[in-house]
Image (cartoon, rainbow, N blue to C red; front, side, top):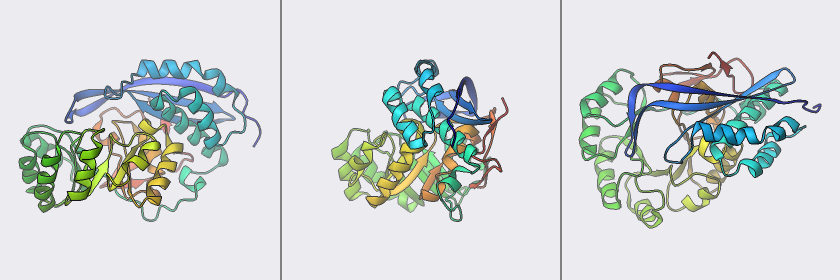
Length: 343
């Protein structure tokens, strides 16, 4: 491959509007600010996305500023593989994994397009047995949660909990569908609550529980891991690569978020490590546009579960790429991640 000359960096910010106010155990929001990174060189463009997040203290403004500081580095890269590029960028942006995610995903997209392949093809993955994505139901009144679920029939629902009516919510939702249920308490339960709720929720057709306890409650995680009648998947306890080993024997699987770990490149390493440890693999999303969701899609062949419904929750998508229908992911005809901006 010839040297990259004058890689151009374009940073764009958008506010995604949600169809419904989205509530989890610790926060509610109706608008999601995002940052899009575009890398242009040699007639190809690659796109990456990241989101602001109050829990992880990231704003669009801070991420944009951090990326602007390293533009001279980005413009000077030559012949790097995505792995080599990520390691160099990590040395400069390691304090801001969210910004690194957008940059890494954009570079992976650009690199695959230049190679004339879709990302999953470049990685040698077969898409014959991809898992289906769930669809998330945020916390609300029981009546509104039922309404959100019935307005979009889906084979798998992720239900956000962490209220005083958790079992009543799932009991009522179960009356309206035979779909698989997954529960995400977003650190909202105690050990006794988790163990008690797991028994009731298993009877209601729940597949697993995601992050029931606070992220750093490792003794609690271990107790729940040993005693729960349902599998437990880590989310807030599994942020970066080093966390996978920490989650072993504390969780049955890990939910990897590209924005938290720094992009597709480290996510692939985390998936491989989790598999080696005999853990279930999952990738999740934030409230993202088709840019971020399309990146996740290329990891599907390596996953047991996936939560990539971000585009279904918004009214003003800014890109085309993968499409979702009844849980099934259809890839774009374009190479790389398959993304094209429309905004």
